[in-house]
Figure 1: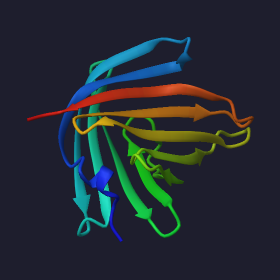
Figure 2: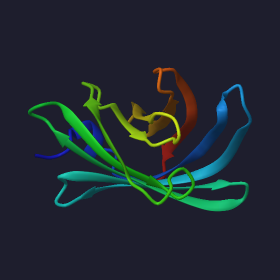
Figure 3: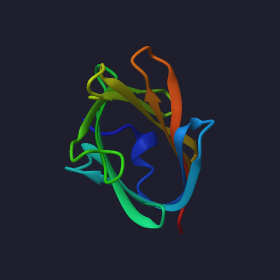
Figure 4: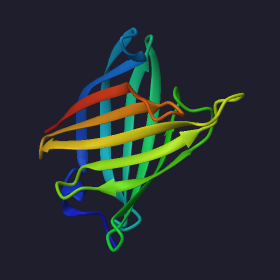
Amino acid sequence: MSMPPHLSGLSGEWKGTKRLYLNGESGPEQNSPSRLTIAGAARATFMLLDYTWKYESEAQEGVLLLGYDDGQNIATAAWGDSWHMNQKVMLCVGVIDIAGNLDVRGSYAAPPGPDWGWRIALVIHHADSIGIVMHNVAPDGQEELAVQAEFVRVG
């Protein structure tokens, strides 16, 4: 199996802006330039998104490894980020819609309370413009915008 054509066609270099919302849309917002490289991995069975950004002028990096079972329409992802994560990879499961947009969800521990959720969406605006949107999901299911990045293809 391989990635759907809508996603595999995104391979290449991208540049854009990442907006980090520290307390949802009502809280402070941090903007930084961002670079994104998208490439097939393991003979195009998977897709690797490797990105950079800054928090308070300090360089940050993240990676998202995507898999897709087209027979069951199940997307899987492993996500790690130097600022968001605590040296752990978050495993996520979700779907890819007919337009190729990805929507996956994972969770993380938030002791002493219950686990919280995290939702990652990859939105294809058109062949040369994509967005990555991440939401923090409270235990009651309430979502707050955490990250919004918009990219355009380079070259």
